[in-house]
Image (tube, rainbow, N blue to C red; front, top):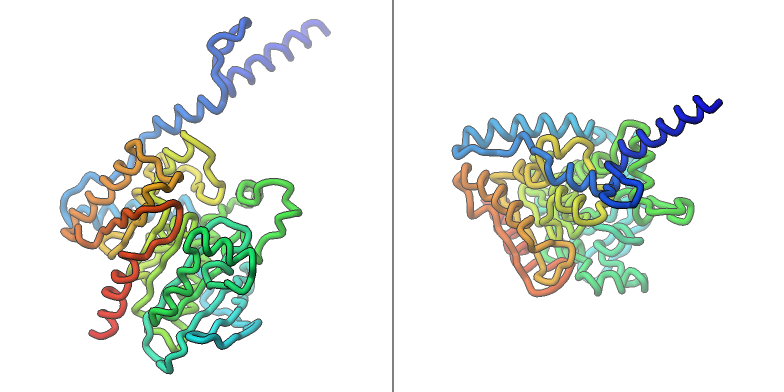
Length: 372
């Protein structure tokens, strides 16, 4: 028995050292798992950073990195066929708002709002997928549900109803509800952070939430293309916070999206996971072996994109991480000789939607394409 106890004790010490690093009996020189991971993440090599200078090099790199990203994500292909169930419709002063469920065998039902301008034009409109971020209300705020008191507060705090703002500019708008938010979560049953719990549970199945949400945004694009009011070639995507991250992700893998507005998301995974908590919904296992969010964003090039950043946004760190992000983006847009397609909107304010550059950009790209 004493020998067994000794072996157990040695095993315990070995496991502790493996997870937590060196430790001494007097408490000096301890290294926690948190510190080990911070160091390892900070030292990640990012082996597939773009280093080219020409368009051909940019296209080759995008093909290679896109292949790697798809391997890491798994399938994000949306259903080819689905049933459209209209739950409600309401004619408002300047648009009609529909609550719709998209249903297809083998995938979870997707709730969306569909917003259509009420000016009598029934064909060939440009369209936008408006993607929500974190919060209890999911897609309700982005669609402009000012009639719901708590949603109205969320809208006011972050200028959050950009779906409504787009429909009032003449766009057909679809606002999908992502997981695990709004109508797609029973938060009381989680007992913890739904983002982290959903990530862990999906990982047990070999899936990640970010891929599921990319699929649903791509499904929203397909839904817009199926609508008679929409010109299927003139579709953009816009979002704030996690909606900005998912706008970046979906635009990177979905060539049908012609222009993007990414708000409150100019940060790197290395920065997020070394300096503070990082949401499980934004994790792609193994990504940092090859690249970061900046490399995913580089797959959007040379399509037009605007990155919105409030000067008081506490989620955007101003200690060089944002500059690394911008330098990597600017390199590939320069290789394409399209630096004017990469725009920044540095505005006064916090973590909110702005639109000062985004709205004119969408009009220029989508409405000009329509006129031509």
